[in-house]
Amino acid sequence: MAGQNAGQLTKEGSLLIDPSGDLQDGSVFCPPEGDAETGMVATNSVNQRSGNVSAGTSIFSMVVLEHPLKKVYPEVDVVSTPTGDDVAMIHANNATSDINAWMHLFEEFLVLAGKKLDKETVFRSLFFSALTDADADAGNLLTYGYYSGENITGLKEGRPLLVRSPESKFTIANLMRAQILSVFGALKIGMDILKKEEVKIDRLTGHGGLFKTPRVAQQILADVLETPISVTENAAEGGAWGIAILAAYVDKASELSLAEYLKSKVFSASSTITIEPNYDDLPGTHKFMDRYQKGLDIEQAAIEHTEVD
Image (cartoon, rainbow, N blue to C red; front, side):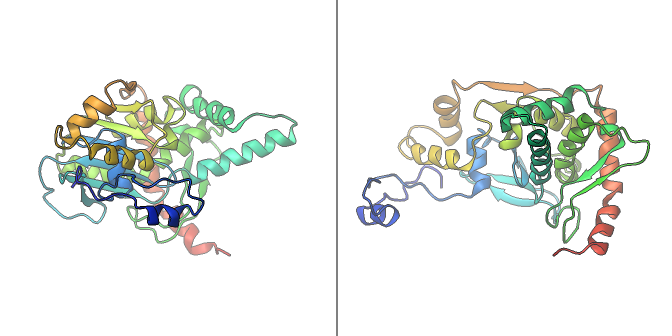
């Protein structure tokens, strides 16, 4: 359990890792945890009715439960916090890979045009357009960033797609908004199951690379889930930081619970921004998500009729 001492790095072990001898022995080991559990710690989401959404190459949400789910769902995994509370986990295989591909395309154009912008500026400019210049429903665009199969939507393979009608408003802002909305498409299907199960959520915290650009993905996720979303100043940090916190907790476990330790020692001075859903945009957001679910047959047809080398 969290707080238990799992040993220390020995001299022989340190030399196996670093034969030069620069790595010193004595590092404290905590019980090992996977990305899900370290993500809970990194977002201060170990209390019941709290949760987090981690968005990178894949995306998952974790919600700490007050009571067991009534049914078993293939879309929902039940795991636990490092201290043993049940957690409902919604995991989707595909998230930001297609956004990264489009970003590379825009960067390539800038090079051809003789312009030089750093990657962070390109990301920020394009992301902010999704919040300030796009239609709420992304201008009747539809995208799937499926680079692999998706368990929640029942697809065994993936084909990245952009679908539009002649009447769609095909702008950069709408393209970026469609891309970000699509990242949350499969996740929302799983989260809707928890809503039917009457799972209560007081707060969700976003972390991972998608939230590095301030406000944008945070606002869109708040709209998709109709839930306030918090992001801390360390939003881009993840599992490595979370497991380091758990190792540091070993020396404090006799004095504080893990929740108390996180609140008083780790996050007491950290800056947190919470964004409420934009209720003016909710009808358009709902429209996109309806389009996302209805269009899954298009994704299936693309899988059936296009070959992969």
